[in-house]
Image (cartoon, rainbow, N blue to C red; front, side, top):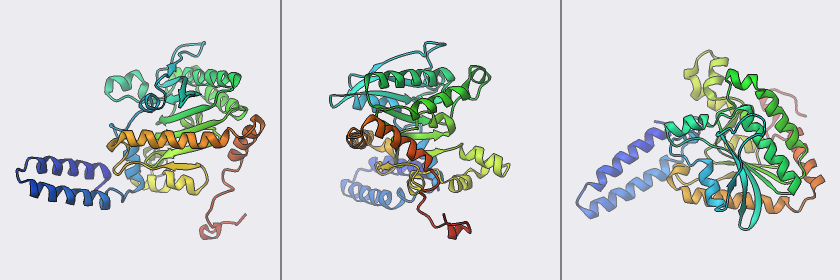
Length: 318
């Protein structure tokens, strides 16, 4: 039984319990349900975390922005082609401190997902993000990026307008920034579509988010020619926050409420804000040159700071 099936089972039980008239029995049964949650809802496989990262009720980027920045002002357009609605960008203050915030926005309904292109940005979305990063650099504003995308849009029009180049230009620009950059993965972090906002001084992940080169279904289709083996692929890909922290790819994990972020959104927002500000207070002590060096050195060392024994894999210890 995966995490979504457990969640449905719990909801059915709670609905039945609430229909009972005996308060004493109801209280006893609710205590048993809570105990079940504490024992079963924490036993999560990599595939369970994939399902939670994609959960339709999982809070979206704009909800985090509204919580952290009541005065957020969205800016539109890439000044070349159009305004990509899958990427939100603008300026806002968190506890009185100004930030540039750039986020990938999924929809909460089919209509909104169509409007947001299911959070799969076009090149103009990445160019909008680049414009806002350059503006932040000019005015010395720290940058927060919120990542939640299955990947960059792979359509013909996107390729014709330079999808790969747009992502590459973002990576180049982010490597040269001298302001603090903090990225947080709140749901899916897929491929170059996520990496285009992920070249940061500090990268955080929500506990049940994922970050990988492609989807488990895509991985299974390529490796085994069978997309139904996505559960096995999720385990092999090491795409969870705990896997990536172990490999030193990310810098911290933001704990989620029992059952996932959608069970208690307010707590999730609070913990995310606290984690972001904690990292910012550390980074603002560094000079622009130090921030530039730290960010580039972090990426250059991917693959060399892994805390596992190569001998166990039959490889060479470096």
